[in-house]
Image (cartoon, rainbow, N blue to C red; front, side, top):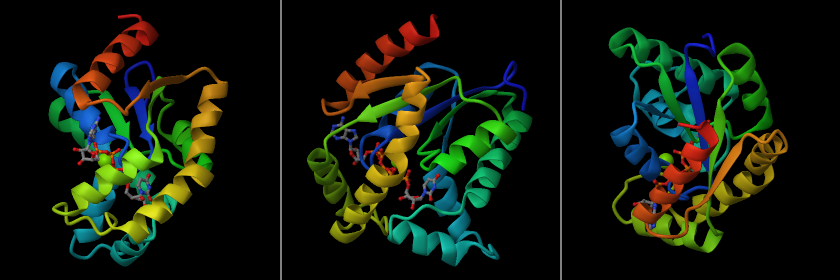
Length: 197
Ligand code: UP5
Ligand code: MG
């Protein structure tokens, strides 16, 4: 994909930080297509005949990161499919990259990201949200044990990705502790400033 044609924003943040919630608002108000790496992996896990079903299932339950080849292929296919179907070339890539190797590989073989939107939220609040959602979500990783593992992976493996982009001045950081509409208002102000439009 040519970066002169395609716009990619990475949307990062801890488990339950509110990435999906904010992406839905950005899709509503701007012409973005929302691609959640986690959603694409869950769909692949459930696809009959998938050779990665069990691998994805085990990784998600244990809060571990699926090998990047799988996730990058799913994202690339979804981008191609979207562009062929709708012509839209603006993507919010949610929950990816969450490991340094994925970040480097994606930007090398697919497309560099214009910027990284990082939702920052204390662990206690993220835990509260996920346990609450777990009452009805049916997500295999919305339980106390999986949540603990997801937090560990986030701190040890995913935060270094945010730090890497931060060092390149490519991060727009938003505190996602307040209610969703307030977080969104802050997102709009900061994105406008960063993108200059
Ligand atoms: N909520 C949201 N915002 C709120 C707010 N401001 N105030 C109060 N409540 C708020 O929100 C979570 C919950 O909080 C909801 O109930 C919401 O109403 C409420 P959501 O918007 O869903 O947060 P999000 O950050 O999207 O949380 P999610 O659980 O999706 O984050 P994860 O990063 O853990 O999940 P993801 O689906 O991205 O990944 C799951 C797993 O897939 C990973 O653990 C990993 O095993 C695997 N994976 C990979 O291996 N590779 C990848 O590249 C991506 C995923
Ligand atoms: Mg999500």
